[in-house]
View 1 (tube, rainbow, N blue to C red):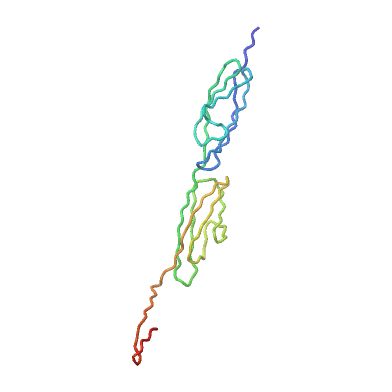
View 2: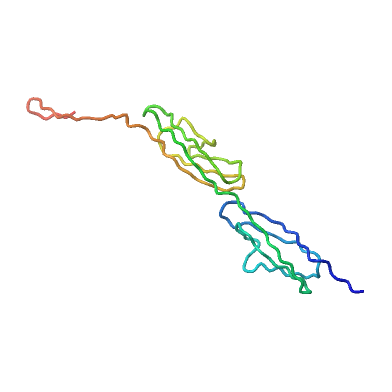
Length: 171
């Protein structure tokens, strides 16, 4: 009686890319059936350092039997920020604010502003530059900056030169 080996079977363990634009996706294969030993052929691709995309591989057993298959690696969307800035209403009131909107990445997000605030939106601000670091649940990082301005209040200073007893006086 002639025994024929079972068909080659592959179980794929896929890890998708953690952050937009990275190449930290990977796949490992568990191969059974056929006749061991097996050869994996990914072409010029390293299956342990993949960016988002589709990849094809071939498995060949020791009898020369082959199986071809493909896998797909995905990635989260890029973290996109949008800022809505409210400038100070006067130069003596600290009522500026920054409303931060975020899309992409993987929720939830954490925030760190350069004034040590850790909320998405910040309020009661003085005039100045504010920087935020956004970190998503995968550890992906995005940055943004905003400038809160104060009005000039149209203040002006006039210097008038006058003469008193022939001497020039400036105030």
